[in-house]
Image 1 (cartoon, helix red, strand yellow):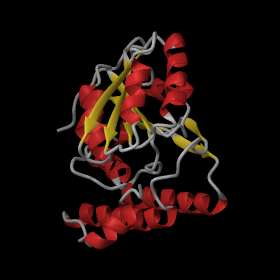
Image 2 (cartoon, rainbow, N blue to C red):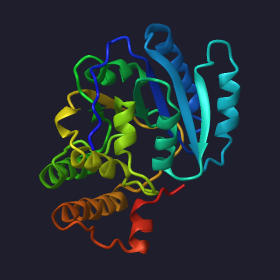
Image 3 (tube, rainbow, N blue to C red):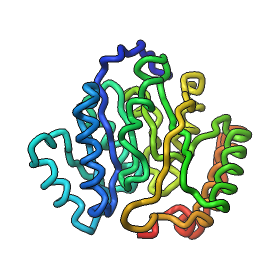
Image 4 (tube, rainbow, N blue to C red):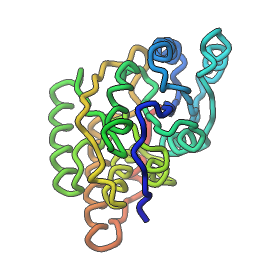
Length: 261
């Protein structure tokens, strides 16, 4: 059943959830940017870093940051699962009326949070998805544009693979897929948004910048991920028509949709 939501006032509080795995070298810079946002954006009340399987001391770095004067908005949580489990855990803990979910690798700028959440707080939308624009090389752009056209045709939504989203907390909890350990969490999430009747209240009007990671390597191979997402998209389209997804061979799923570090 679709959740009934009343329009939020622009003064509604905003939580930020950051699924995090092995980002010890990036979180200090990110927290500094969030600190600057906190000084100028009263609606922003907390940043919840949800650690999933980190092994590089990220938790210790964040603990130290949270103890610095003015950084008490930085909060830590943990999840035993992968990115999807971390996102759900963070949204469950969030105290804001609206919640922003963003990757913690520094590729997105917290300064754009007010722009991303504005359609939700002021425009009557229930979910706002950032339209990535930035540094991707030519082959990756071709893959991205092709995938967007495919998801638009098969699933009715174009911008699915973005790590920068905002929405009403209750709606996010109603649509975040459960038990999805792989990197197909985002396409499955947006498929749920459409399947549960929220498509008419989904905004993809906000263009967000995307920059290279400052430290570390990406957790996925673009070509492998594209194959896995292609299979997932077709499988979800088949499910809409038959009620059942295509079988996804375990070896193929692990090869294409699991993080590499």
